[in-house]
Length: 118
Image (cartoon, rainbow, N blue to C red; front, side):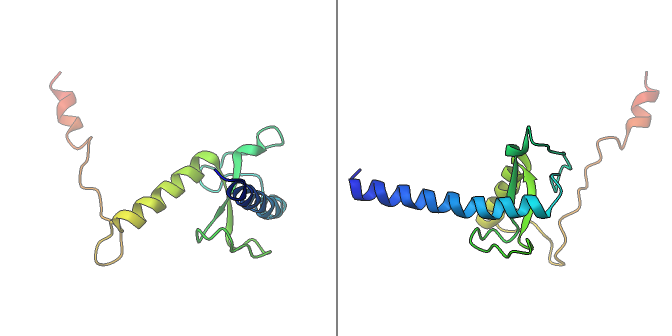
């Protein structure tokens, strides 16, 4: 890699880290230290595992009121981005009325009869 390319990449990473530091610090002041999905609570010891998720997936949209942020643990954050990727690639799995398809399989449907056989 050329020196010029190396410096461009290094500067881009520094800019990203500075931008993230700013909105992360703001979000941690605005919101309780709880994952917005799994409700796991955080303290100073494990705070590094709590991330700022951009609701509209635009990392440059950082209104100071925090309206585009939610705090998610690293696991829920990864899951959210995976779901977003899948939806972007494969489209929505909803019906024509906009609702997700209803599951029809019931694993315990015949449980009562199965228990009588013993």
